[in-house]
Amino acid sequence: MLYSEKVMDHFQNPRNVGKMEDADGIGEVGNAKCGDIMKMYIKVEDGIISDVKFNTFGCGSAIATSSMATEMIKGKSIDEALQLSNKAVVEALDGLPTNKIHCSVLAEEAVKAAVKDYYDKNNIAYDKELFKDDVHNMNEHK
Ligand code: FES
Image 1 (cartoon, rainbow, N blue to C red):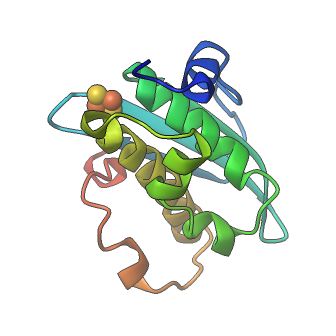
Image 2: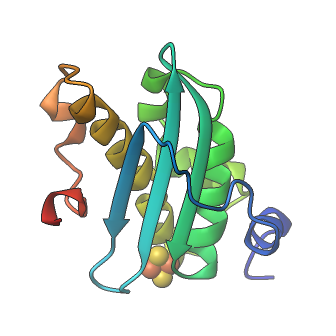
């Protein structure tokens, strides 16, 4: 079996799918190679991510990893969300085939881009180093 049961479950029944009208931060990222795009919306209350939604125009692994990522950051502090690594998402899904790891990177980047957008919109100072790997961030291109 190429995909774990958890991957199949999150692919077939993705959690937190949709758009958020009153989002506090929106992150849009894409992978130039496969052309997949992911959009992540967060609602922040007292430094806690109280709600999160995502949309992805992407492959099954992109759907499964972003679904898992939303579950992992919901109810967590922003700092904890920023620490979410694609590796942790892959582990929570009981693994992904090697050629699908980049899909989980997209999920991590989408979370980071949403937090960055929240910081920018609220004029919150942050360490730019935190986002320096964020090469696929599409927010800047709008
Ligand atoms: Fe590119 Fe999955 S194939 S995100």
